[in-house]
Image (tube, rainbow, N blue to C red):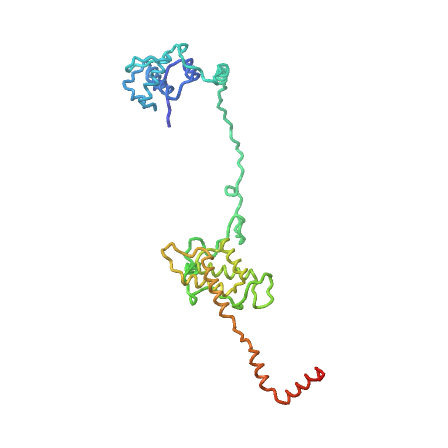
Length: 340
């Protein structure tokens, strides 16, 4: 611990000079030069300071190129005297100083501040006697300790867990977590962990929440099935994006069967061949083209050609079966209508 003493040296300078240095508008570099000159002059019980080189002013943080400029300025303002070589001294006649006062300087307030510090009361050393009364604690009391042991735990005590922390007891297996995240984007249908849709393969989304037949599926189930299949084949993510939601909405607007959408997603991932390690299927719209193509193909295959009956053959066959008696009856009926 530092313990400065006057016997080790001090700067014997009048307080009036310190007051003038405080009140004048010196720059930071000028103040450092003044302090160094005072320390090497009055601090060494001399009126002049010997500073051989301008480089020595770097000790107080003033560079060589700035030191000479500031020294010349202080000399012109008649604050210090310099022989141009290595002798420096302070001009104690501060009335000759040509440095302005700081804007906020107030001599009366400064004098008042000095009087406050001169009139401050000294703190007396008061000794207070400690009381002989000591409060007895449970640990230091002289009362007898009973031998009965309570089974119940105190409120500040915690019951130990069955498996203490940092113990080597068997815990959750790491393989459980590994198996849960082993989902590849290139799974085949036989290796897929996705639970297939158990409803009607031709079911289409119903605008209503409740479905009346097995030919329709609710929009919520439709969205959940499509999203789950896409995320499972992609191998990452917990929910589909807003653009993917729009793609599912288009599927429902076109009334594409759910199984067709699922099959289209599988075909898109099965046939995808990445060009580099960063290439991947980034959105559901990539699968939309395959889904629409598959839907059109299945629609065309489901159309049944219904043969149109040839009425001309029936007329010819009916005409061939007319007998001679039928012709006579028809001729008689025609004559009766004409009144012959």
